[in-house]
Length: 174
Length: 174
DNA sequence: TTGCTCCTCACGTCACGTGAGGTGGC
DNA sequence: TTGCTCCTCACGTCACGTGAGGTGGC
Image 1 (cartoon, rainbow over the protein chains, first blue to last red):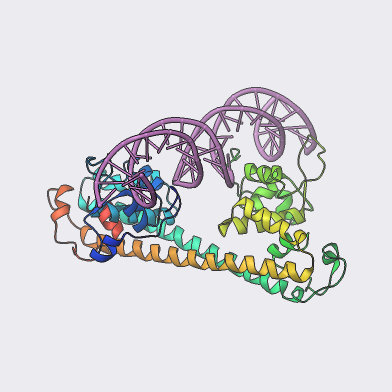
Image 2: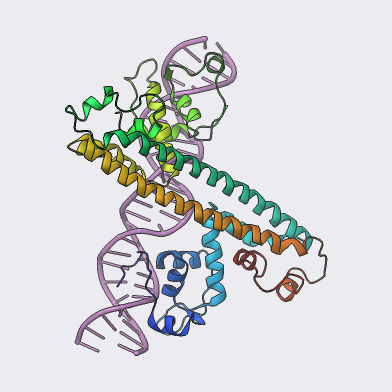
């Protein structure tokens, strides 16, 4: 139904009838984490998630707890962490001498990540404003059928010449 | 001062005295776009930006307009576009028969990108909340020096067992 | 002369994508 | 039997990173 490696969104019927099953196939894992078969297998080969001993045609079987781990890993990837950084975070607790120090260490690292996330959100909002400005720049051209397109656009004064967004320069005034 | 390929933030003295120069070196381009020498050269080799004919020791020279183009390209990359998608956007205007159609086409594509950006921001905010929840989950452990660390954490009830964030399960309850 | 910045290969990296070719249960 | 989902290689991709080794102007 779906070529391997593509995004999969279908759910099997048993599942939607009976809710989330106890044992998950690779495909289940991919669907419920918005990833792909390849990603699930890759993360397993990297030791980030663990499947049970293979049975029944060498198919992987994952317990539900591994799905939650996978979803958390996907979240951290979204936050911009590399797989190595995620591995380091997972291993952090085991390297600390006490719960207290582990909690403090993890808190410090995660706080740093939250700061980075907020900077990233700020950047995306800035770019979003940039593109919004570009849309406004392009407004006067919507009804323009003047001759000399596209070269004449360069010297055209219908578009407010001052304060054009950088994207407008890139995509229109070239 | 900076190894090649690393992020460069220094500004040369002439520049800070005289403002932005008319002709920019590869290093100037990298600094003012928050990228690297490698990226500037790579984008030039890909035809995304253009340098003048080489003189003086085969060094590249960029006019100021190319810096603005580079900055716009960096913005679009931040927005999640691939270099190919950016090339397609740059070429779009030239493939349209009139200013009107070009404006409409560009508007439609950029609107789609803005929608994607807003979805991305929503995702990052969700992950940010997740990590915030993880910090709260870890609070009770800051003063914990109970024996049996780390294995005893699994059955510990000081941490509120219900509604722990997925990241807490990944990073603490394993 | 010494630093600094620039240059060109060219191999490496990260996180998967993408077939090819095959198996197994309903 | 037919579809569907799963499997294992193994090469490919994208956007650069990272040296190695060298040049040129102040």
